[in-house]
Image 1: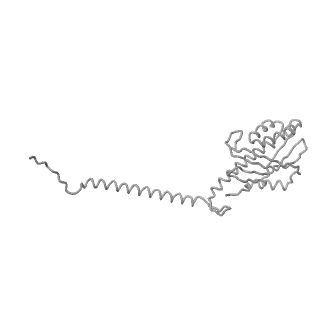
Image 2 (image 1 turned 120 degrees about the vertical axis):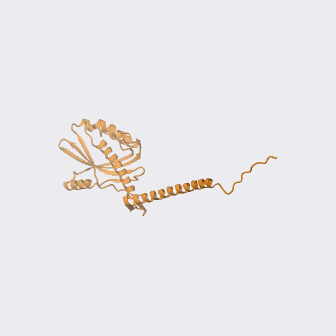
Image 3 (image 1 turned 90 degrees about the horizontal axis):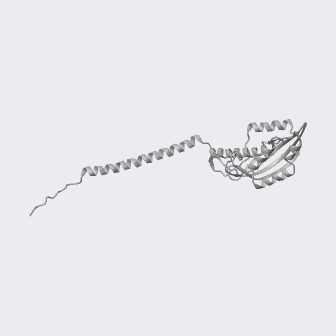
Length: 234
């Protein structure tokens, strides 16, 4: 009978075991390094926030970074710019610019304001500048009259406009108390450069006396200080 050789292995293959253990060690080391890097990054972010941001308390008593207020103020600036642009297109008029400004203002408004503007047109608002030679109208938003609510949604904006109508040597003054409601839309430059559509427009117009020198100084002082409109930070 032919005898087969049998191979007897004493103990384990030390090299295989070392190789296996090496993979485990490298795995543990890799996970540890990733964990340490993640913790250091998180600590760096927290430290950066704590040193670069100032926190304040809002109306509800919550602690919020001032960067959120900065974003809100940026929105307020855009809303004010849109209202100011609308005001210049609607109130700053003369016989040479009336056609372009009439078209420009209709790009900024929805159905209700469009109907109101067309009604004023039928009553002679625009035709007066064509029939009365040299008639000029200038306007300025009174800087202490701004009020803006619901900044993050569909803003409600109210302000007063001082309108000066010049006919030769005669100057008449009017105050238009304006209320606007806006809806955020896509920017359509140059027709709607700020991305807000005015969906509601009301105007209360009354004749007023010419501003005194003291009133002019006060308004100029407010403009220089760049006082922001009244807003509620939520």
